[in-house]
Image 1 (cartoon, rainbow, N blue to C red):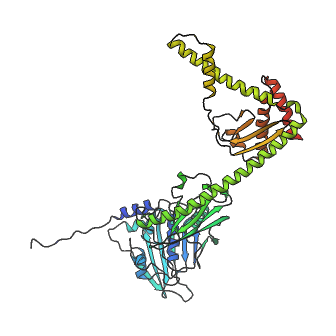
Image 2 (cartoon, helix red, strand yellow):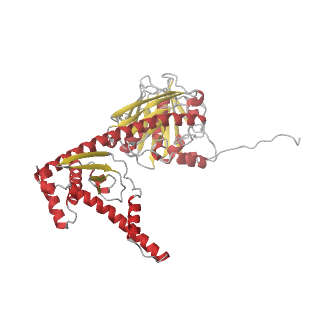
Image 3 (cartoon, rainbow, N blue to C red):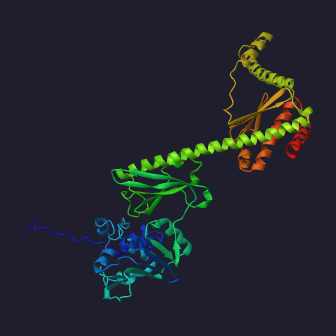
Length: 490
């Protein structure tokens, strides 16, 4: 008597279920996706979505639902689509799983009705939020009547007493992203306009992997222009339904080219969280998926970087060659402005002596403070010799270097990375370094005519500074203006 087992009735409060549905589908537009995907699961070949100011209709020509089917439709967590995961007519892998979408629908409308034609009968259920919450019972009244011979099988869901309006543009964009528009024998219409999957022009790299869990199929698209689409990344799908976009953490490594990456990959074996906005990432299935698709995407990004580097080198080679050709023409017209080898040699010697003198002065101060011993010419000589033996900080490796011959003097120009805070150009002996990191360089890089003027300005500026050891600002400006005029206008 005392050992008799008792039971406790466990129930879910209706308000909690409504809240759960609303939170899982924060954007009420999600419910339209849910209903369109339900039609796909029901072997519909056509779904029509009608948006009005006061109601929304989703009508399909699928297999319809009888009383038992409607019971499963309104059952939270029904096993129907897991047990029968493939549709009977077209063998489609069914998308829907959790069955909470109809409760989320009440985030947008006070009620919705389901009318389904199957086996010669029409079954109708009205799901009114206010009526449903009045009592503790879970039963929903269902009506049944014979259908006419002219009526085709299928289901119509009507959302009425709307709490928010639906924008045509928003719904269209969402449907293009989230329903299987590329599936065979499946068309979706929005207010009688057929919705087609977005096509992005560009190079396509196929993805195909066979794993012990199932196939991974899709493609990576390298768009011709980043402006041809809004959202970047690989669309990761399960049963053709979008879950989320991914760069597979490669955005932390690669930057150039990411805004041209699109495409989609489908893996039906992946497990998704209840909100259908992410995967169960610690599962073995997702780890395999992540590693394989990441490797595919990384190869594409490496190739893009290589192509970009090659294109960049070709561009600056051409630009620098053209700029130096124009400078040569201007210098031939004004031989008096050509720097002499002697001037450059003297400048080089002075540079070494100035460096040595600075080191000697510093050394003298140190000795005076410590020993108060007078410096001798010999100590200066030794200090100077020591300074010239100091290893000089090497310039970074140039990206491109070009050379022109002027009379008996050769001048080389190199494009080199010196940092954003460094000067626009630096000259050592007869080698001019143009800083590719400088903000002005970067700003003008993609503007052909302005970029050429930028190179001409910097090269002519440095050549004029080579011409004379001591030069006034007025002289430098006038001489450079002369060179630029003939380099640009000839």
